[in-house]
Length: 228
Image (cartoon, rainbow, N blue to C red; front, side, top):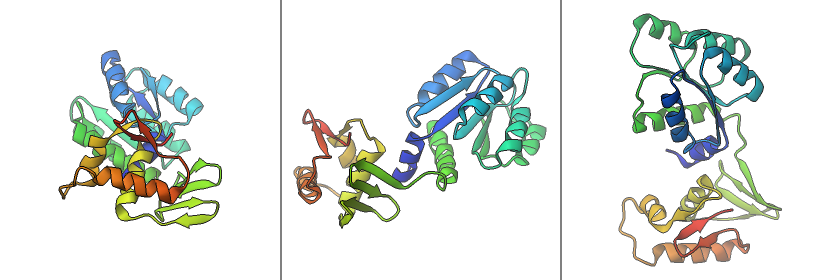
């Protein structure tokens, strides 16, 4: 998944409407690996009330639910919001429901269970749709920002140029801001098509820290790095 989309998702929230408790709770745990918050509802009526109260960024809803089914829920939401990304899930394919759902501007109608690669793709499509809603300027510290669109680190109104590898490294840390990213995970992403010498990552971090002149990249127990 594109790093920018990972960051957009980590700032966003999902409303998950699913009437089966076990499925709902296990799916919530998976979704929390991608997003900041997941609001859950056991039926369509509760889902609509939560939508109104919480204003989530993305909706994932089952079709067959008590009180309001998935399509009825989406129709009510679409009266208020034509743009929110919506994914419909179902345990089976119903041609009539599929045709009806197409009219509601969905990201996709997908049959459960959703495979990991399909969930990655669906959430990335949601992030693409959210792209215009979120700021691409991230404030890191006072007088210190990162501009995603232009790949610029700006400190006290001065742009500090990054190499391509430095951009990739910095954005990996931003995508997991507040959490440790291990050296192994970083190297796997930075050096996909090349064999990196043992000191490559260490040298990259050393040079980048000298450029930044502020202590924003933290080393965690010699295991990896993070941006707090």
